[in-house]
Amino acid sequence: MEWAILALFALGATTFIAWPRRGDALGASPESEGGELAGEREALLLALRELDEDASAGRISAEDRVDGRRALGPRLREVTEALRALDDAGGRP
Image 1 (cartoon, one colour):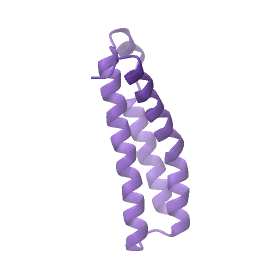
Image 2 (cartoon, rainbow, N blue to C red):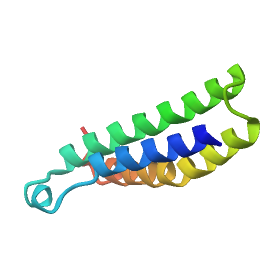
Image 3 (cartoon, rainbow, N blue to C red):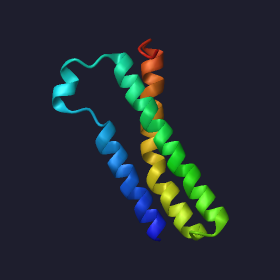
Image 4 (cartoon, rainbow, N blue to C red):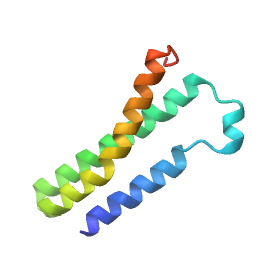
């Protein structure tokens, strides 16, 4: 259970760091937004891989792994959909 809490905390910190600030939005371009989203997506995928590795090594229980994946999944889906929307609009490098 501790690992799931740590994974949620890491996700929150990653989201806070990647989230655009009010001043950043004024000069934000689709390219920079796509780069930020891609970075957040990579961080989320890394967190999922770490959960899987921890579960396979026996450091966390299978239930904690499932809880962690459920916590990370919705944000990963949002980021992936936003990246697809940027790609469809021609804004992704």
